[in-house]
Length: 397
Image (cartoon, rainbow, N blue to C red; front, side):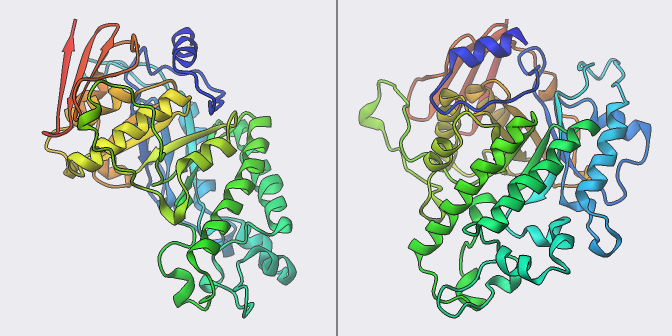
């Protein structure tokens, strides 16, 4: 715990998030598990495997059936109850003998009605349904087939913050620490509105609706903070202005990418400063030098500001996992986690050798040696990442 506190002070920024659980990611590798099986974990052995990770959770594949009062989150909570009773066994192939720092369950943020019991709440309440879904500003027709939420409607946002937020806080009693919100900035993305009955939304109006969602989420996060719970926010948005100080200004080719719907991560960070949220990267590294550079720059900026991040690598996108794992360590701050998988089901997840790395805590922020090259010193070794050639190097002391 002390190391996590020291590193938080070392990299503290004005947008610092508040995370209420102890972080073990400087005393063991902060491995991340995100899987699912519609039937849930089947055995003690399977639960024990999940318990080996520093952060574990279940996704949308846990299934949903509103008619039976069952949804994926309930299945995830049941799995969490079981998991909390399991301690991983230490053996020759497993170095981590500590249970997860935290557990999370999944909720989708773009089309909430499709995924959990908000659907049941509005099923027999036409007034609440009308208040909760987005309508075309001219024709007043329901947009997107009824699944796009009206974050500009106070009746709905009050329900979302107080009732749904209250549900998530109550889950803490079952050992669930966080909720994973998928697709945050994809709200109203692409041609969803114009092709599904809402042609009167231009880019400015769409950006305005996303800002409404950001503001509504602030109230939601305040509810979570009062209950010591956390939101994991899956986003593709980046910071537009980064404070990456290095001596190669002439080589600076930095590109500002990932501003979906004209909203940058600055908007999130400023609105949610001091609140409990973690940023999630769905596909960490493997996109080529320019985009990988932009991703790493952004994660370094998040750590500088005190915003934790979780990074998931798709195993088929990198020729070796040393590269994305090393890139993670270059940017790592308190309450950051990394994992790799070939998909989102339990069967797609393995225990990788990188999870057994033990470099201790970083001694200082990373140093940018050239445009594509970073280094960082740790208590027990050093890390180098060459983004141009997609290579990572670890030298343990």
